[in-house]
Amino acid sequence: MNLLIPVDDGAAINSHLLVAGWSVKSGAPFCLEFSPCLRISVSQMPFEDLEKFAGPVAEIIGSGRNSRY
Image (tube, rainbow, N blue to C red; front, side, top):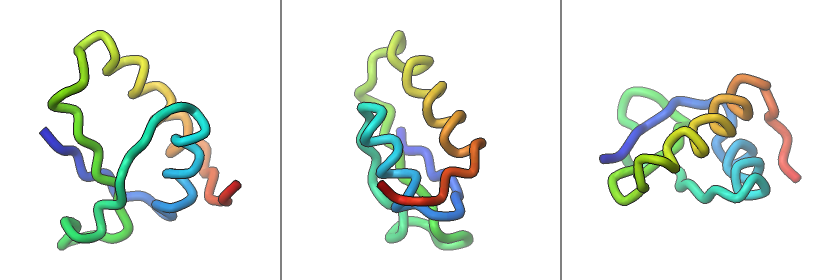
């Protein structure tokens, strides 16, 4: 399963998630109605890791961190 999440600056959020230990891809090729977005694949992620992942994603996206490292 893939999630497409609209964001203000996908590259900045991607870099913050990478520093937090998570790798996501740009969803640009798949976002037809909104851009930019992140494409997050969770189908192979163990269920117990979903909360560990969701926390940093929500924190980074909700914090407005739009600058790159």
